[in-house]
Length: 254
Image (cartoon, rainbow, N blue to C red; front, side, top):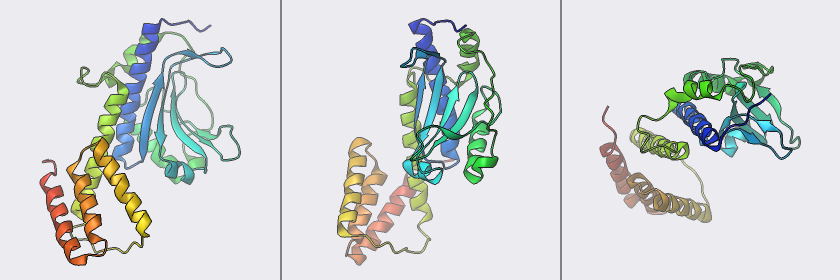
């Protein structure tokens, strides 16, 4: 029978599960996957009053979901059976096509990333359709807390909240992706992308919004580059070169 937990214990379980999800999300982002967020919760009662164990989850962009079923698709961790990838079709709102890696309750983040990679290549052939059971629901929470402890942040006073830790990770990863893309484009040929004026304006608005919510020299220079290229080729080349030089200047030293 599941044992109830105190609010403090529930909050601690939620926090540590969230930090574990951040560690997994970091490996997924390093593999180039489009992670958008993490979630976690301690033991809870659902709408029917059923007592459920600690959980965590990782979400992806809609484009990723569309490539894998056309509906809802995500990565979930349950405190009893570990990680699993689930899919939910556009018409069938019940979970379908769920796959478990079978790597234990708390597999290393690198193993989870490998499982997701395998799923992307061959959904039906990755992992197993059988849900494992590694721990009895609602039991022995102190042991689970200890097992999750290695994933706590090295600087807890900065990243006590897993959401704040993920937001910082997310920003750094995408900032680096943009920087690397700009640097690598220095010797790449020009590509032709036909945009309507309204589409270009919308893109510039989005970049402006990104700069206002997360000030970045790269965002500002990229927006300036796109504006300069819109009908003014001579200015465009000069501004583009400036953006590349600035990106290279801000490149982190190894």
